[in-house]
Amino acid sequence: MSFFEPYDPMYRDPQRNFSRWQREVIYKNDHGICGLCKKRVKGTWHCDHKIPWTLGGPTTIENGQVTHPSCNRSKYNDPNYEDIGWNRNWRAWWELIRN
Image (cartoon, rainbow, N blue to C red; front, side, top):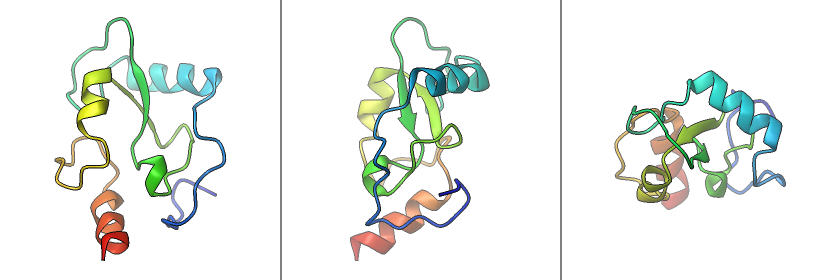
């Protein structure tokens, strides 16, 4: 599955966690900046799915982002969370599977 293909909300990537290599590439691509609050990450960080894994988002470099643990926990599949650094398909998918 390519990052740019439409996601099937009933599909879940069998790989839930990002590999060490994927995490390193994502951190370098994001320059250590949180994809949600846009502040530099120091110390512990999460490798987060832009389109949540629980909603069919793949575990790929393109769908990964660096986040502070607190930022990542605050967005937990919340459809009202502002679209900050998220793939624009998020709200459309949420509406599709919610109804």
